Image (cartoon, rainbow, N blue to C red; front, side, top):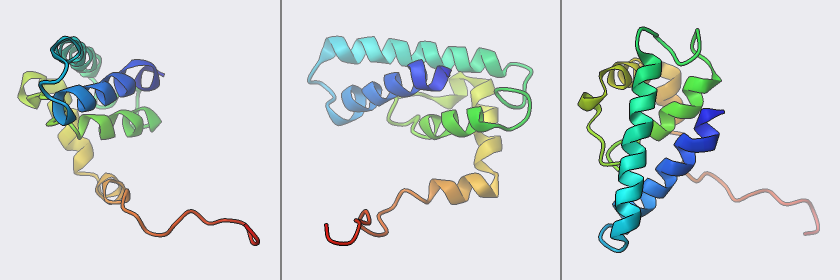
Length: 116
């Protein structure tokens, strides 16, 4: 899947170099800045004339949207990618997406079997 093979890993590196360690590795910052833009361009092209990534709303949209929701960390202006911008807002308006976005908060420790 495109998200697992390129989009997610590259944007994870972008978080590291462009947001959390900005100014520490200029070569890596430039590399991931350019690759991030390329991937957003690819996503924008894919969404041209489409409501969702693959036919109807699917796991593909569910896997890619959370990465796009961190566009600020990627130093991306969604206005530069009109199809991504439209798709992003459309998904962000879904009650299920809003509810899912609020999930990654600590609730309890990982349960362990008895006696461990």
